[in-house]
Length: 179
Image 1 (tube, rainbow, N blue to C red):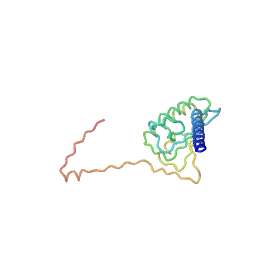
Image 2: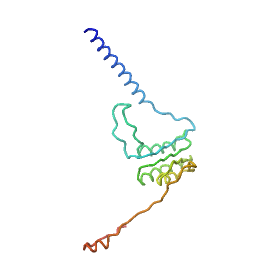
Image 3: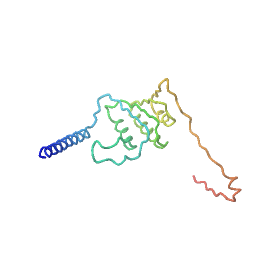
Image 4: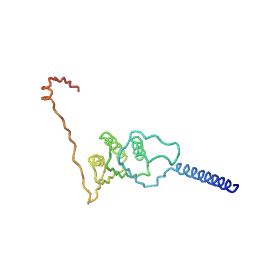
């Protein structure tokens, strides 16, 4: 019985020691910040959604999920890159962005502000959609693989007119024009 209890106690001590080492390794890993070397190029990969604000974060380092970059982080990144002498250019890589036209326009305006610093913007497209291509039009050069295709259909709007249907129902429309 004594050997059994000593084995259980030894196992618990080893598990606690391994957990402590893992905890400190994750804390140290979470504290590392990237450094920027001279003559660097910022690669801006935009894919999927770009939320306005970040999701709720876990208080434990290493357990947070890989959330996408927020709009605020994208704007501040572009502003800092424009004033950072170590960054010489941006390579834009949009891919199937699931964001609205307003956000695409705001990111494009941020890239235009970056270009005012005299640094070039290059775009690499992979089967681009209309939003991807619109964002890439701010770039100095746009690249596309020879075997790839450009899926740009343009913008359109559809309006339905219900006047005859509403007249049959006896409904009268009242419209006001503002602006």
